[in-house]
Image 1 (cartoon, rainbow, N blue to C red):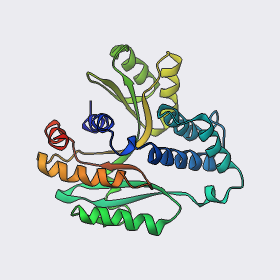
Image 2 (image 1 turned 90 degrees about the vertical axis):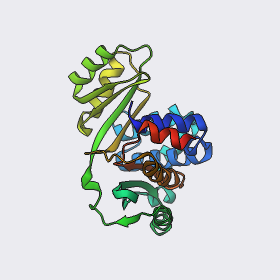
Image 3 (image 1 turned 30 degrees about the vertical axis):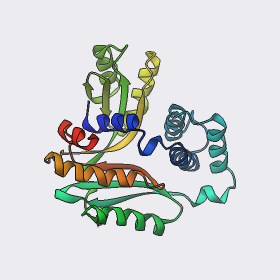
Length: 250
């Protein structure tokens, strides 16, 4: 199980940032609205919207909230048209790279908040492309290890186009090129297997290994950024070791 996945589990157990229900629903609503505005309000033809809706359902977001978000985005609601998705880039401490994906209706406010947190963590903002070249956009899908046969998952995943399938004690992780995302999810569902997590995200081409204390300093920046209302996702090229996770949890 990757360090980032372990960290997500730890944060859920601690009731950290994303477990704050109101903030979480705000992020999910924006993601649904943006996807619906860009590709239409049908989850049958808009795969990005389907992912956003599935994520909202997995987080126990009420059905009426989901339907209202789609309706606002596909109607004449001016607030829906105001949102846009942006990716900010930053240099973190110890040579780390950080990508910050936001959905905002006020770029000036958002970049000011992001810059403040990055600077406070001994990092600085970077020009577009300065950090992102170190990452590749990939489809990421996880399936619970319990009750699922890793060999069967491997066969289904590879046949559907997965580049890598990693099995651990808790989950089975599948990585693929973005264009294979829909095929893999469809193949899993056809086999009666429901993913516990599925998203498009930025994966580092090479992981940066730091000592535990230095790793924690980067993780704290990531945590701070994730707590901002406008931030959807934060990616870093730092490897989250077990030692660093234990230090942070302590």
